[in-house]
Length: 500
Image 1 (cartoon, rainbow, N blue to C red):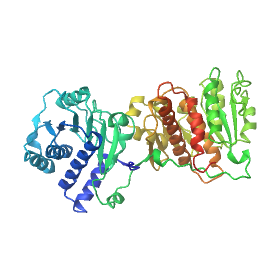
Image 2: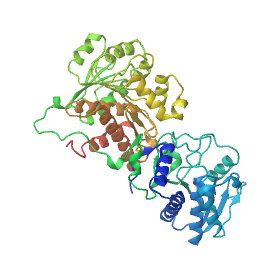
Image 3: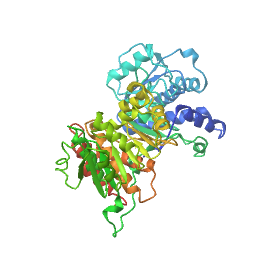
């Protein structure tokens, strides 16, 4: 079953829960019972031979889900041990009711004090839930450490304890779940930063709430699902010529860095750009295209040499292998004031960070976290602590569309945020960003002849790039993946729908 594409903050999910209870008269305990049942069904689907289960519970509704789960597992004939953390006398509401119902089946929670977990087949995490707003410490941290070190499969209820639901930040320590079953609404932090590492496989259950409740709380983030990848490019007419599909000009490749700009150029060509030109350093302009003679190369030695190319160009890709010396600055200063759509990547982003007064409505910026930190005058750690806030700030400051790369890349146009759930760690190798910037340029060049927006192009390019990386990893594995390995797959994918 595919996951929903709408993502929510923890507060938004609480509002959905409130609407279901108050406006549609669904008792909170009914929702809790459904959550426990769906989690138990998930167990049977993923671990059908499980016999002994440890259920860790805290104090809130997340614990209530765990109590319901424990009761159902016991009634199904499984051996269940419930470990309690926190001051049990403070428990109240639906969670307390769930605990009392559990005790009717002769299960009594015992305080967790670092007991061994080696005898269990499965551990269920119902400790902290989505309301976490401070670092995990004390007995809670001890329990999470023991669970992680047990090397047992873990089913997390709603979200792994210690993972911040809105940001994907680890609150000092977090459960590394094998499977996470999330209820009512998927949380945005599960899909970026550390979310994917700690959530494992994500399963969703809406607890049978009325679909109308989702109309009451607009989502602030949309997941770009691999299974809904759609090519926005229209089918090509037979009476076409290369001028119909854009002329992309790529600027970069300082001394010793010709590879970066040529990889970007090859990517622009492989997604279907009609013409691809590179303006690069004179030391290698004459032979840079030896491996790909279809790409036209030029040397940059004065602004006039660039003016000629700009007159017949549709899109500029600026930055791969650019450097930051006088040559790079001269090229940057000339290109940045062009009226053409721009893809700004790599060193060009660092030069842009020194000119914070520049804002453009028709460019796409593609920073990784370190470059984003330079653009925002903060640290990489601060960017990663709240990637959603960072991408919003970048877009507000610089305009256009911003792609904040990384695990769970975020794309923001000032109106909405999209998160890409494809991609893999094998793509953490040199040149991957160059391939993406070239793809963006090639797709944007083609889009000038059809009604596509910058955000359409950015979303498709990011998903295309990540999906290609996944296809390569499926066939050959993640280690040893090179950026250019993606190009044949990219070509296949970009032809999979309308662009035949």
